[in-house]
Amino acid sequence: MHEILACVALHFVIQSEAMKTILRSVAAMELLFVFPAVLFMTALFARNIQPQQYEPAHTAQRIVDWYAASPHIGLWVLLIALPLLVVGIGTATLIREWHHNQELRVATLKVIGFIRSQVPTILIAGATAMASGILAIVALHLLTD
Image 1 (spheres, rainbow, N blue to C red):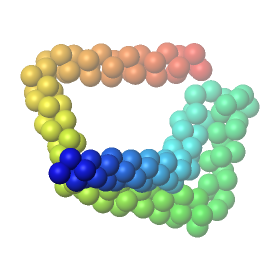
Image 2 (cartoon, helix red, strand yellow):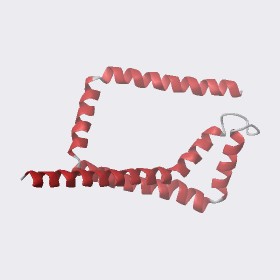
Image 3 (tube, rainbow, N blue to C red):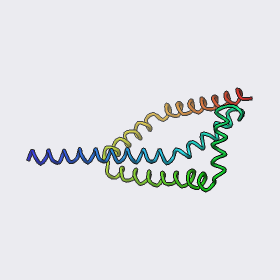
Image 4 (cartoon, helix red, strand yellow):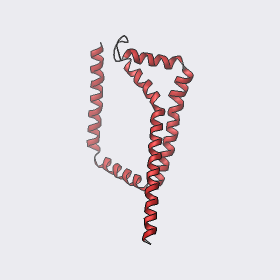
């Protein structure tokens, strides 16, 4: 009987490790797929920080120009198809994990319970973070004018 339990435990550990490897691979693939869109959005922001004759605004403008020069690849593939693929794969993976991973469900319920018990503190932290972001944007704007 002890040997059967050991085999079941070993099977669970092997299966868990294989699943972790698959999840890590999916996460890496999704990050790779979404990177071109993040690069483009970052370039859009960076080109407006300072005049385009200075770096990093100059390089950012070149990235935006490359995307604009090849709309079939830049717009349709890198900015629509790949992020849409990430949404589909991510949703399917999360649903599968939700159904097969009891630990994830328990941890999620604990987090939701914690958030509900700390709403005022979380709202204060969120407002503080937003105010910090706004001040950073205003400071950058004042420095570039």
